[in-house]
Image 1 (tube, helix red, strand yellow):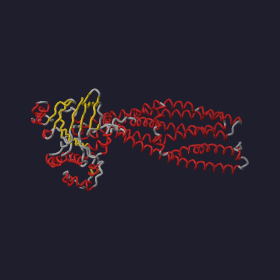
Image 2: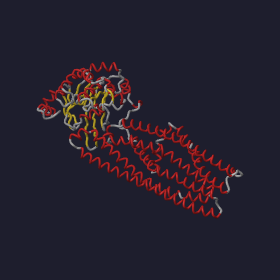
Image 3: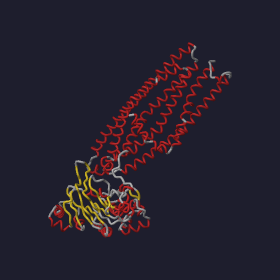
Image 4: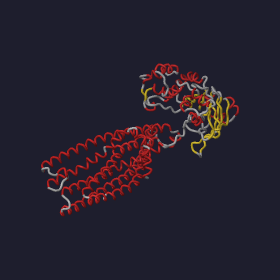
Length: 599
């Protein structure tokens, strides 16, 4: 476990290296801080020795009692002031380094999470990801800001105090140092048990966040189907499980604190008993005994603080472990190095608009190994051809789009765009050439212009012109501030048809080589669809189009129709040819005409 912790902590090195000066200053201050703390009990003991006429340090000999006391009080105040100043400087630098560390880790986690394929996100709930990006990163910030450097400071202080005590009276010094052994063993013993419980706490918190996020996103369904009480009971069960897990960590945390207090009281009692006997026998002065009593309290302060930080430290180590698991999650969708790309791929990457030929060659794909979605699928869509893909639910229509956009990788076969394997193309180039309008439109919070631009470098004037060409003027006039109008989360202040209209427009302004439409006009009312139809016709002209549609009118206009069933291409041809063939397409078309099914 310790070696794994060191490996996980080592991965923080590159992040900390960017603030090496501040971190080095904080570490350098550990030694003077420890000496400033250790000198205070020594000065107090010397003051008592001066008052009792006992042997004192050489530089105090010969001084009158009032003068010696004034000097000792002045030095004590100076030591306190120096220690406070050094502590303030160290704490400020440690907190700054900790916040910068966690900000960089949070950025990397976010970028990595966005780069992970949909396959990872399919099996990982949003709530669990949010827990790692927020709660786990905050735990790491807390342990670094108040734990990591604090532990080093405690260890340095322990060494300085121990050496000082042994130099004053080696027998009592060794006795006090020996009392640290059972405490250290107890901390090591509890560490592994606490880590397991704390990991479970983080997992339960992730599940709790996932439950909360799911219910808030599906609030409309929850309320319409009167699921408030049932979902509240489910959330309460998860909340109770989380509470019980946290209670387990409290048990270990309180146990180590109580054990340290017990050992420290016993150690102080032994020092009082033996020291009193030595003072009575004349082998030790009262000033030295006072110094030892104060040192014995200081000796256990680092262990008390370690106990107080115990929860933070273990929580931070758990956070590092969970953060590392996410950062170590491999990327399924990776780009080839330029040297590994073919000459055709390198030439294609330099082009702007391309012809738009799409070829699937023996493509097989499964989300789960026991449930194949596409089975040895092959077809070719010529440049400029308009193709519709139809088939029963679960036949693999949407999967074809996801594979073409390289949101997933096929287990077998390859996909070509203009004769180039899409795995050889830069991902940015591939997705720039594909314009996708999905049935489920997603809009970001922000204004309308930002949602239309996304990554496209388009000026305000050009955007205004394009919106006019795409028939968006009536929609923009209905909004208070036109393109500058603010949209709520997921475009909640727009109707479904208006959101779909914006989704079509933001694809159109990018002038893609291949237009992919997954029932893009499903939520448009007849009036809005008629307004957009002429612009869609212009958009589809001289451009490859792949349309997944369920309405017969949309499919009939296609140059060719591909019919899928259970991931296989079973028919292809135009509308009339497939109706005459009397196969699956003809059956689906007949059922739709009767209002009994969708294509």
